[in-house]
Image (cartoon, rainbow, N blue to C red):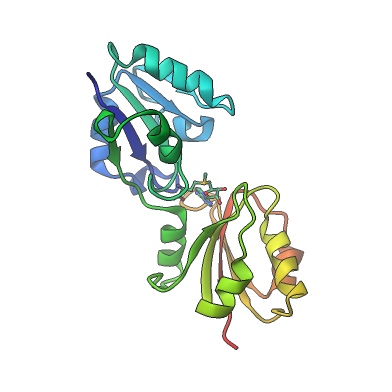
Length: 207
Ligand SMILES: C[S@@+](CC[C@H](N)C(=O)[O-])C[C@H]1O[C@@H](n2cnc3c(N)ncnc32)[C@H](O)[C@@H]1O
């Protein structure tokens, strides 16, 4: 039986995708991914399937076609950091899946600002609320995935409510794309500079 490939494609630009990811994708019959991610593989000659919120449809497709077709699912950033791998692991055994890692959007932002990240807790506010303020106070540095509710402006507002007006926020927007922007400032400046598109945020706070 064909293995189902789950492939991390990094922050978005082709230069940040591992050669093995390209090889595995080229060897596949079907490429499944979000619309933005599929755009990167416009030259893919096989079949493509767009992932929507109706995950059960994709699951059904994979279950009914995996015997006859080699299927690759592409996810943004790294497979091990808040990706669909968690979902697929609930439905397939480890033997049925093969995973190729990618560069996480946060890992990429840390490299752009030339900062090590080994001591920074990395959290996701993408579809969830995590207490990042507590972690920031404890570790002095945190990295956050955002979404349309937990935006950089919203994060800035929370920091100000918590009295962290002088924390330094780094907003990485559309990372690795030609429209990439990296904006650094205190919460009130970050709020003023919004709105932002797709972002991750790193915060530094020295007491
Ligand atoms: C479902 S999570 C996936 C995280 C991914 N697995 C990773 O390792 O980066 C989606 C979030 O990743 C972040 N993200 C992914 N690609 C990005 C990019 N090119 N620029 C900025 N943020 C990005 C955004 O915070 C977005 O809301």
